[in-house]
Image 1 (cartoon, rainbow, N blue to C red):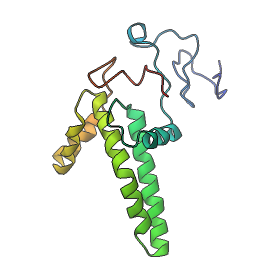
Image 2 (image 1 turned 30 degrees about the horizontal axis):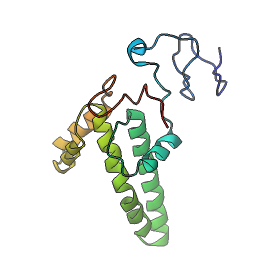
Image 3 (image 1 turned 90 degrees about the vertical axis):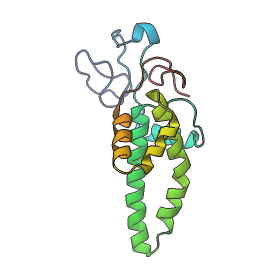
Length: 162
């Protein structure tokens, strides 16, 4: 059987395409599907960047692990590229400007990620607790979010994205 979106070959019993993340049609088994609806396909790299910038100052709601980690990868890649460009040009201007441009959406996304596991966005202050705070935030960022609605909004894995 092939994916209806990217035509990649699907493994037997697959719930989602391993290439593009599209839900496999006709597969009715999804954990929690009966109570909360079908899971949406995982957010991709470009969509995560778009969501990060379109929710620039949105500290409300929830963000999936995929959205958070794709955003983190984008930041790392952009920092490396801008660091190389700055080294070639002999300035530190581009990297610094980029850092200023992404600090607010990064904090907003961090707050939404913490909301997904039922924590307040204020827990990001643990970044100031060197090593111990970093480890706690890393573990929380890796943890799967709460299934279903919590006090911060509906489950982003089962709610259609805008």
